[in-house]
Length: 301
Image (cartoon, rainbow, N blue to C red; front, side, top):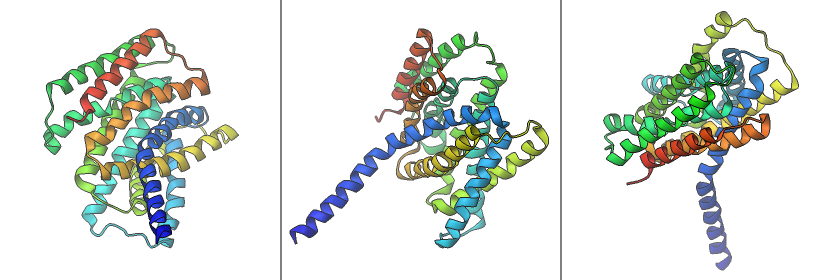
């Protein structure tokens, strides 16, 4: 009997450790996505890169879902909701980030701009989900915007950073914010295996015409590109996205996306290690101000 209860306690301890470590693991995996994008984009245009990524994810997840007899959405309405969320979370967000980095934006700055998602989600959740925005959260919003402004200000002197890149990063921010709120509001609980197939297929359907008729640069199948593509498929599109779906399902929308404010500093460190990207003292100050602002918005009342 003692052995039985010891085993139960160990299982509970392992499960508790897993649940506590999930947010930190998600932040690290999500941050590597910006580095993987910068690593692979010199070898393929953004939409083509993403379409290849989505095709591989579907090729992996669909047979798995069929073999395990995973549950598909019970109604057409639920499937449509999943598709809309997929277009926003995968198509719009990733296309914005990839286009920004492909246009010359550093991985760290792209992560910082889309890292404002908790601010945007916190404010949008007020009218959409009935959450009240306090005076402290408004102050946090202003600090977050000011911090990003400082980083963008010093980065405007860097060759290659264009208004188009900044615009695409902002569009990515808007898309991931809308997608997170939409999924939380309308999708509810769903099987991650079949849900991923539907969401990535919807995003593929939207980006495929852009890749086929809007991009002419060929794909160079170098070892670097294959590694980046494989990392983004396995680690980001399957592992990190599954963790994000679990976190959204388990917690409130605003609380879940508060994890994103840790992404910019983690990405900055990874980009420094991988590419030698450096931030000036003004940029570091701006990042710190932005993180403080997001923390003020998302901190539990």
